Image (cartoon, rainbow, N blue to C red; front, side, top):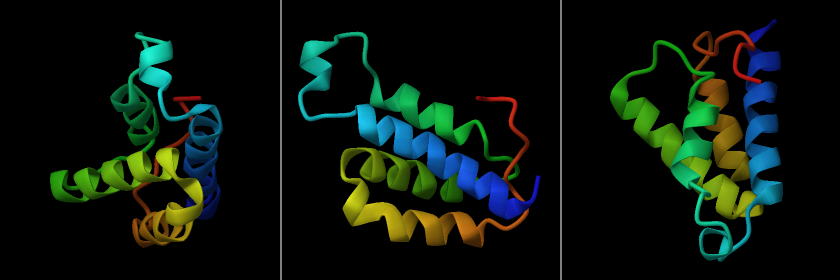
Length: 91
């Protein structure tokens, strides 16, 4: 799988979570955790510094909450992580 395909797979994970997310989901579903959703996406990253992982995690959170406002920034950040996306063991 190429880096581009892996970046696309991560973006697909974020897109699914963004599709399911809505304001107030935490109140409607007490078992919901945005942090768990972010961890699910982060599990596809490898060999990323803690600072970079934190930046990407914040972008995931923003993209899940408001995909339209964040999608370009997230895509660019993932493209900059050339070579650090891992294979698809976390689908």
